[in-house]
Image (tube, rainbow, N blue to C red; front, side):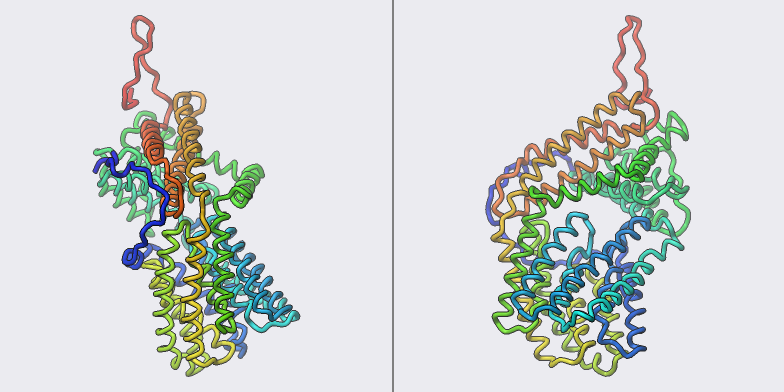
Length: 588
């Protein structure tokens, strides 16, 4: 497969409402390689408070402890140092959203006000989670908790105690998420590097634009994971050298690279044994300059670690976050869709007589993805999954009512099943999420099964219709502007990498390595921006020729500067005193 695109792929896209797929969004995927981690974590984090409340005879408080327990779903792809901060931040955000909902519920019983507050909270949570790139499950869990709390009976004096339960369960979830660091400190880094090696192997085995981008994104993610992991250890040093191999294979797809060897390294890296010690990457200057040069690539990441430890690095991160939420942010149209769609869904359900239309708000909030096409896919998935999940709930309801312990065990089972299935496809996970959410209502007292099923079906259908209608009508013209900014950023990063390579005698291997990583990040962001804009409706034509040219030029620069380790090779002088051109491969 050639990297050169066909003529048909270079035609500019015209603004129009695209055809909507029906079968593709429902196909099952391979499960995630770490599906069991969030599944087991949420079960353990939920079992401790659930069983404690069962022993105390206060299962009516499960809704508040579950809010904290669900924080165990976050951060499983992050190194433990960052995971600790992330899960703590999620727990505090969960408590803040819950506090706002409980206070509102205690002060008013007006459905109109409750729906408005729920929609505002959902839009805020969506924008904040997208800005910090929190990752799955994103804002949906936060919105589920705050929306449900809005329609729960509440008195103002009860709020502090209920928040204390949430924070206590959140502390248990934090321990569950961070605890494995005592057993396998570099586990997340090893998995990220293994993914980079596997993506590089696919790139070598099947060169093409798709595998090239996948390899670049996986290598970038591995470097970022190592950068966030904290101080270097011997294992992390070995992992960094493996990423150098993955990077060399990913940017060049050289026929001398052995994909089977890369996959074997990935398997050993993912396993519990020692990290493989690779030889110097083929064709790199490390072969000429020994161990010190082989490690030159890690000097740049050490410098970046040091920069992040000073206050200036933190201030830069805060400035980036504020810009992503500023008036010109590309996230604002999606937040506006969330606000309008959730409000419309809630008011429609209230008008049709649903007493607590929180599930319609949650359904609408869960639909909003990066663009309209992906939102349509999620609409299909959510609707199918919820409707099937209602049938599952009706089937297990008699079992759950045989006793309190049976109810607790059913909730724990569906918590595990949801995370085990959701990586195959969102609709499959929703089949388990729906009965779990309905069973939570049973902790506060039994409800007529027909009423629960009927309200949930109505909420699902109206929430999906209102949510997608808002996505279709609220245009996101800023998606194309983001592509323009990404093109400029990629061009600047490519120029910086070329300058660093040309002047590597002064910039040193660490400066060149940072420039290369910055260019890789810009190329990944460019492809992400282009894919988002391509799936957006009512969009002006994308500059496809410029996009393809920018990506090709950027990846050529990455390949040309792949020999960034070791000192630059001096070109020999001719007898006339002129400098002879350096060999094309950079070897002496």
